[in-house]
Image (cartoon, rainbow, N blue to C red; front, side):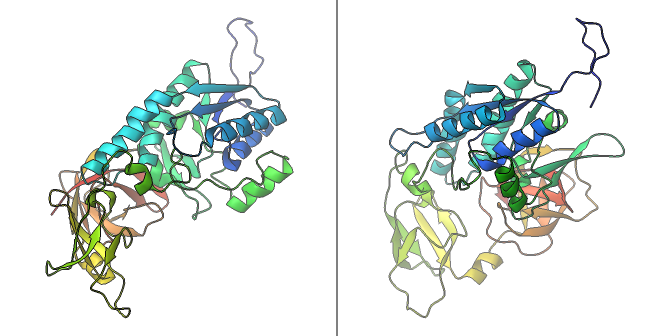
Length: 368
């Protein structure tokens, strides 16, 4: 334990480091709080209240209650921060506007950037916390030359560094990821060992504010459905869809085709034209061959330092997606894939890795 001097008592008695843990009501954040308490930290559980549409099944009340029950079980203080307006503006409205433009955003990335490691992080430090902790599957490592780096979690199947590429050095220095060094199965065992009320709770799926509604069902409340044509690569109409803005390049669902035999391969979206409200589809192999060789980035963030232009790195296009070898051009904003990548869509995050180290990332913009 680090020794902290109490300027009021003028003694050399070490004080416990104060940690605010973001409690979602799930098992990962619950175990994070229990582990930190076991390690001797002064732990406070915090529930972040976010926006949820009135017309969906509200799970927030149940999640809040579970967070409170965990705090009561661990005998730690419970706090709540209301970030409803911030979440609606910075995450939901941004997501809707991006889809209207025909782009595919990553709401989990914007949530981490503006909410969990934005408003919540700043508030927690202002409230006197030495650290902020979450249930993310990620790890923080120290560099020999100084500074910190973001590393993949032990459980590769749960690794969430893809969503954390916007983190900066100051945030890493004041952040703890207690479950990052554990397998998911170990987290479940610990939850039962600690007798946590959330031990058997299922993992949440999908967007946290949508609930059981799919993304198209949510967006249709804010973006009008409008039937458009599904085209093959020759430009012939072979089906219909309910709006090109609902669809993402590389998807194989969300549209119907009529001129197709039962023996044909599944069709995937190769391209979309928002102005004409059309999509072009083809077989899986065409998705690969039509993907761009180079991508330009915006909103770039490097966690430790900018990558070199004379080294091959790996680029990840989507969560749990394949990592493709790539090199950076001299401008630092353009990357060239060393092999054909999977479907690439405007607005998605492109995250870069050097082995298990997450270097940072950016938002995909212009294709060559």
